[in-house]
Length: 483
Image (cartoon, rainbow, N blue to C red; front, top):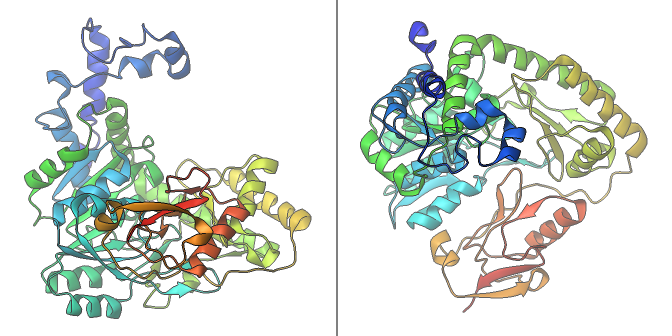
C-alpha cells in the first residue's frame, strides 16, 4: 500500500473545488443545490445538498470513469490489495450480483452454501444459473449455520466438474469463517472462479490479527460492504477483483443493473472512508476487537447469556472467528433473540443489528465507545432480571435444509397460485421468505415447502421477526408453482 497516495481523496477534493466555484446549475438534480427544496436543506444542510450533483466532465462518470473516479478506484484497489476495484452505489447487493452475473450465464452451475444472502439467489433469478447448494453444518445449540467444510466443497466440485464458480460467505453475520485459502485453492484446482461475499469483512483487510481477507486468500472477486464496518454512508460498497479477472467485462456487467445517476454523496463517502481505513484502520479495528472482547466477558459474567467467540473454532466448519462480532445466544434466559432485540429498543433505547430465533447481534464498529458497551451490558442484565422465563419451545436449529426441485429462475417465472401458508406443505415455492436482517432465505424459489418450514415461519412471525419476501404483506399466503 502506498501510504502517501492513500492520503488523497480525488472525488471529495473535486467536489469541494466544484462547490466553491458556484456554478449555475441548468442540469439535474432538480432541487438545484437545495434552492428548490428548503425542507431538504433543513434536513441535510447546505454543504450536503450542495454536492448532490450530476455526473459532469470535471467530476467524471461512474459508468465509464476516466479521471477522479478512476483514480479513487485505483486507490481502493491499492488499499485492499486488489488488482482492480469498483465503487458501487447499489449496496453490496449490487456487488454480489455483479460477481455472480460476471461469472455465470444461463445454465451454468455455481456451487454455494444455501445460507447465502438473498442478493446471491436473486442474481440466479436474473441470469438463469443453476445453484449447487452445499448445506452448511449447524451448531444445534446456537441455532446458526457454520462455515463451508473443505471436504464437502471438494465432493461438490468432484460431482459437478462443469461448475464455473464457487460462492463463499466469509465471514458470516455471526463471525464464522471458513478455510478461505483452501477453498480458493480448491476452486482454482478445478478451474472455477472463487467469489467471496465479504459484506461483513471490510475490517479484515486492515488488521493482520483478524481472519484472512478474500484478496489475501487469492479470490477472484469479493463484495465488500464499506458501509458496515468501514464507516461509509449506507448503500455504498466496493467490488474487488483479482488479477485474472477482465475488469472491462465486469464493468459492462455492472452497468447492466447499476444506476446511471450515481450519488456523489455515496462515492465521496467511499473516498473518505477508504482514506481513513488506509491511514488508521489497524488501530481502529484493534480497538473494535478489544471492545468486543470486553463486551463478551461482561455479558458472559451476567449468566444465562452466551456471547461466543474463538472457542467455537474446530478447524473445519468453524475454521476461524471474527472477534469483532458480538453475537449473543439468548435462549437460556427463556427469550428468543428477537424478543431481546425488541426489549432493548422499546425499553432501553438501544438499537442492535438484529435478533433471530436464538441470538442477537450487536454490531460494534469504529464509531462505538466503551460507555455504549457498558450501557448494552447493563440493559442485558436488567432484561435477564425482569423478563427471563422458563426455557420452552426451543427450535433445534435456525437452518432447515431445503429440497430443491427447480432453479430459482424457473420457479420465480413459473405459473403460480397463491395459497394460505398452512396449506402449502408439499408444494414448490415460487418466491422468497426470510427474516430481515439477516436476509438469508428460509425459502427460495424452487424449494419444496415442508411442515417443518411452515412451523418455523409461523414461529418466527409469532416471536416478532421482521419477515419479507412474499407478495402477501402479512406473510399469510405464499405463491407456489401451479402444476
